[in-house]
Amino acid sequence: MLRISIDLRRGGRGIALATALLFAGSTLPAEAPSSGKPKEFIQGIKALDKNRLKESETFMQGAEAKLPGDGELVRIYGTRYEPYLPLYYLGLALYRQGDCPGALVHWRRCLSSGALQRTDRRDALLQYIEEAGSCQNQ
Image (cartoon, rainbow, N blue to C red; front, top):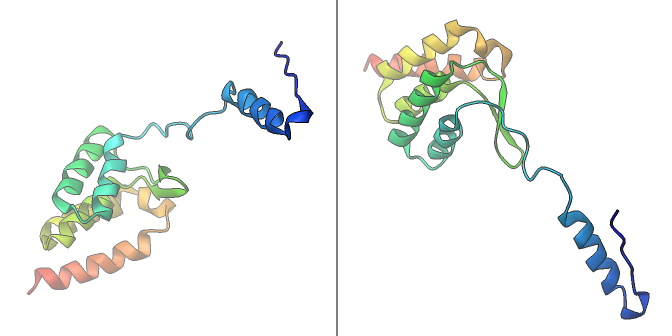
């Protein structure tokens, strides 16, 4: 058992030190438990955020190859969560690179997988498909 003595004559510094020591040995996790999803997915989202589109494309291809999308929320960082939909984000990376035909291939696969229906991304995907369809016809 841990015994802590606190000297209140030192202006409360003992309380702060005792509290710090108490929590230093705590077994609280530093981060949320792993989602079990490929790390490439998180790397791909971060690359997409920084407009590193080719890098995001590569990461999303790797994530999809390891584990098909299921729509479960994945913690990206802090309180940011994204649905696990590598094909959706792969299509987005391709679309932003101007590869409309490639984006459409992956978005249609994502739409037919069923995972999208468990997320809030369906309407956005349908809008992207419409835009990419007109981009392809130019």
